[in-house]
Length: 241
Image (cartoon, rainbow, N blue to C red; front, side, top):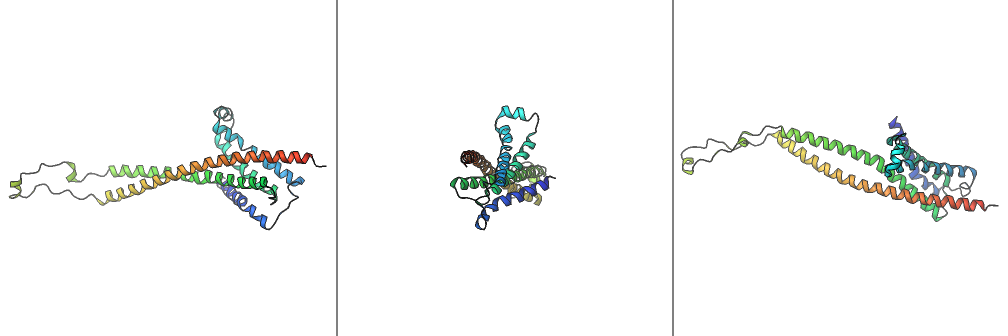
């Protein structure tokens, strides 16, 4: 069930990202102000409102305690994702490729940035976190296997060096230490490679965390422009004869 939902999200996000390109072949200036266009705009605004409970529960402890009594956080996150994508879908249908004003252009641009950054933060960051946990578990297993390798005989203890004159008469009783076994060399190389991969993935995770803040800023600006758009529509709509 979750895989089907993820596939649906990928298809909707792909449609949202390529939909504005349809402006090159189609535009309907009268549709956004029609009854159908208005209903799509209302649906988009309602869907965007449904994304707010998760944000409030995540950043405001008081609201989190109240909301999580009835709805779990994973459910709030799912509602946030689906309603955000559906809101963007309805909003783009509401535009009907009419980008005649600076406000409309800014709204569309911020909408695309918010959806793209949210998609990247939700799916790519989630996959990265799972990969990082797997790498760390693999590193711990390799280190444990490396420590379980028995030491070479020459490494167990140091023998006292015989006097110099005795070395001219007799050969040394202690032979030089044997080279480490091939398993130890392979494990050491694997540990080095895995440690490098873990460090690289940790740096990437930090970058994606900053990308998440970009999503929050873009979403906040989007809400501000949506409120301005609705206020302008109500104001000028009430002046229609």
